[in-house]
Image (cartoon, rainbow, N blue to C red; front, side, top):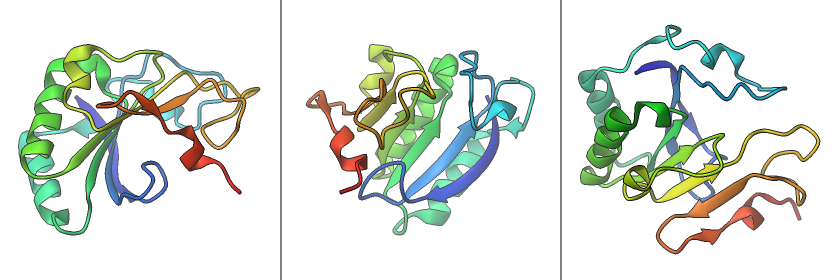
Length: 149
């Protein structure tokens, strides 16, 4: 599983400071994608267990959530990373362009964003979006948290 970058992000998971891993190999390839460099599996570098664990250790007490931008196509490895994050006290989130997420991944997620990017419908910050930001445990759609007043 290759990643393009690791960032600290503030807007993707409302109320959380998230460590964001952008994973390479997305096969959805949405028209208008803001990250087409993530389409090629071989881009980026291998997300080793050491790099992953050191990153979580570095931000422990500062960040509260581990966010994966993609990676669901590496289900076994992603599941392992999510379990580790939870064990370390982090909340977890997956941003996926798919309409649904496998139940074996869902059980390790606090939140999930689903839905392919559609420029005509916009993202989570619009009322007409096809995307959903879901609290997994309650299956509650939380799109309202992204809307501007």
